Image (tube, rainbow, N blue to C red; front, side, top):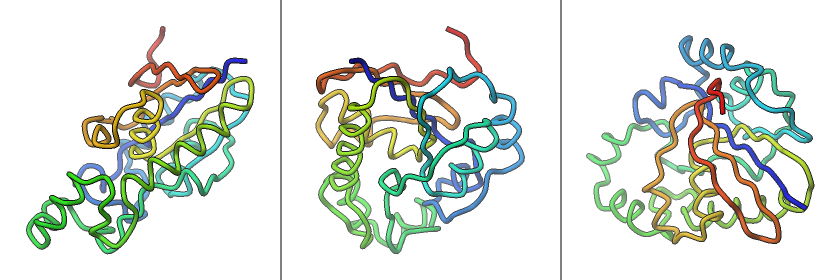
Amino acid sequence: MTSRVILISPAITAALREARFDDGCPLDDSGLRQARAAAGTLPAADRAWVSPTVRCRETADALGIDAVDAAELAGLDAGRWRGATLAEVSEQEPEALARWLSDPGAASHGGESVRALCGRVATWLETAARAPGRCVAVVEPEIVRAAVVQALGAPESAFWRTDVPPLAAVELSGRSGRWNVRLGRPLGATD
């Protein structure tokens, strides 16, 4: 049995434009317009999930995806850095930021480590792999990164080496614990 998982990153928001840790901001006008324009470009899915964030929910709605909130697909908990820009954190806590970016087990911000996030996403992927057919999930970029790391069997340190553009699809297909990865197809692009 082959399982197919399409992970879609959310459309652009002010937080993404400003390199700011998610603070619950909605899609901006440009992001909403792009998501609506991509509606109907995804193949039919047997199941659909969404990260429980404003930008993921709004992206799913704009794409016309009737998705169920999935707590296990929540974005990385940035702890006290939530809402701060990367530049602000770099200025105020340079050692903590450097440790977080270099050590997958570090949770310098008081939130979740990359290792914990990768483990959570790996568990979700195992569950998704047991169901036949295709599923779609509109998820935070860090969820896509963690899924790619898991699918490729890459070390957790590869997490930061994976760029996830807004409103892109990453497709995983696999069986028996072995995944193939198709990276970064912009929504609306044809095969």
